[in-house]
Every structure is written in C-alpha cells, then in structure tokens.
Length: 133
Image (cartoon, rainbow, N blue to C red):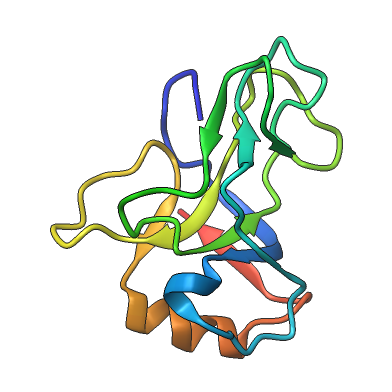
C-alpha cells in the first residue's frame, strides 16, 4: 500500500485466500483459494488500470511479488478494501498475512502467526468480516 502506509480502519469482508502449496500444502477453508505461482504479483501502481488487483508477470507497472523468499506471504487472506469500485491512490494490497518472528510492523496489512492463520482460515467464510480499529 502506498500513500501514508497505514492499516485502514473499518469493517471489511474477506475475499479469498492465496497460498504457497509448496510450503503450506493443502488448506481447509470455505473461502475460494488460489495457489501462489512464481509469476503472480499484486499491482500497487495507480497509473495501471489493474491497480489493487492480482496480475501476472511480465507486467510493466509497479507490483508486489507474492512468491517471496520469506514466509510472510505463504498464506494471504485478501481483504475487501478498495476492491469493488477501486479508487487510485486509496490503498492496495491490504492483506491478512503471516507475521515475521518479531511482529515487525506492516505497510498497512494485518500480520498474524502461522498457527493462528491456519486455525482462522478453517473457521472463516464469505460472511466473515474483519473489524480494524
């Protein structure tokens, strides 16, 4: 997320799950799920018509890699923030993802432990909302 890099406040639906099958294996959830591939990125460039959307490489605009060396994006829950009627520069790539060991701050996402994430994804569904205060 660009701009002032803070987590948005409000109540948001959860859209779908992206995950690294090579690191996580199969996951059990009632949400739609997609396996993260090496060529998958999330557009964070407001100059692109694909701003705040999942796209594939090659891609000529700025985008965040989802297939990472660290484990932060081994499981991602896509939060429905600025996703329906996308507004440029409002914020992109707002996810619930895995926290680093020291729980370093994110650039607008919500980071949780791997055990909590795996438990959470088995409980959530299309009606689940995250409330961020």
